[in-house]
Length: 228
Image (cartoon, rainbow, N blue to C red; front, side):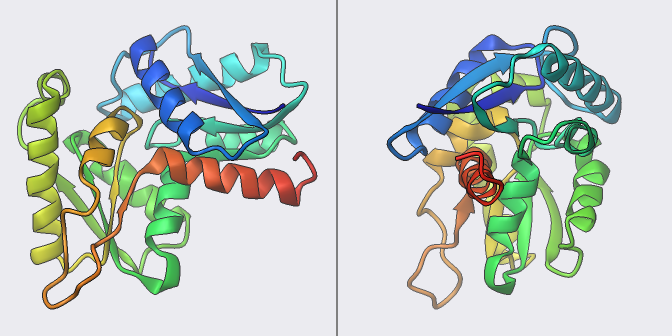
């Protein structure tokens, strides 16, 4: 059985379990995914300082983890904390969920927006989009209102707030695809599939779930690098 490792850069093990299950559902036969939770840092990454702390925790965890038999590693927070450094330290294929989600959203030259809950990470998300070469296609970030932690604690309200932000991204910004920006938003992202259409178009606007996108990119990289 070929194995992927999914690292949750926040310390909430319930989120790790939910993200790992979604990743498992995206795997083809013959592959397995193992979830791992960082040992230190925030329970929810909502600002640049938390993102920096998560990057340190990710690198520490990878350094302490046995990677033998692992075909790839997924960093499952939307700021991709620690990803750049991890790619230089280990030969294993490394994939971030923002990296993968943005790549899928921009496929075919589509213009895309990111919809998320964390206003203090807007600049970091924009920097990631530019670093990945999507500056001309990236339309910006649409945010849900209110405190991210309170919103995350109410799944029904979270889906409704994300839906409202998605509609603004499509109707006001002209987004042709949307990335739901956050590993902990994975379950809500799934609930939004098929709800949106561009004016006059029959096909639904793609709502990119970053964790399945990361699984697909991780498997492609593993195959190219001879790990799978």
